[in-house]
Image 1 (cartoon, rainbow, N blue to C red):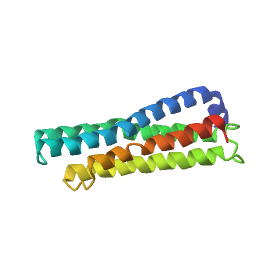
Image 2: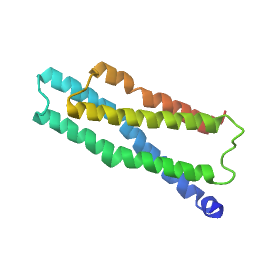
Image 3: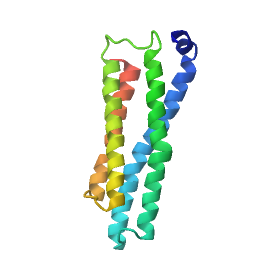
Image 4: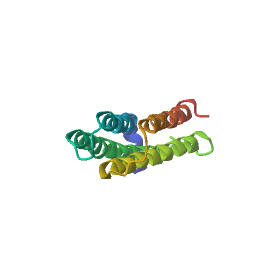
Length: 154
């Protein structure tokens, strides 16, 4: 198994990077959709269940289920394959632990976004557009930690 991982390392790493790019795109865009959803309904005085509301719900569900979930799963799978590749990770350094913490944080944010989608769909949303804008910055913070950990290897 380790021979296979070592011989396919460039392919696994490439797939990991592509998965991360797709996942991050969704993590950046979904909270922005929530801003438009909340503020659009409020601005138009539109009620839940209207065409506009249903369109936002459809876009949010599709982004989460068709892009973000598969991208998160493949990011994890390819990332774990990289971790298991001999000679790639020095567990005595701080960087793999910092990256791991960042990945767990991004996964938490993904789940938070999924829960907010359910709130919006059921009419139980309690957050404002401003609060969603603020939360939209969270994946950037995790990205900074992860990129610095992997590239600088502190």
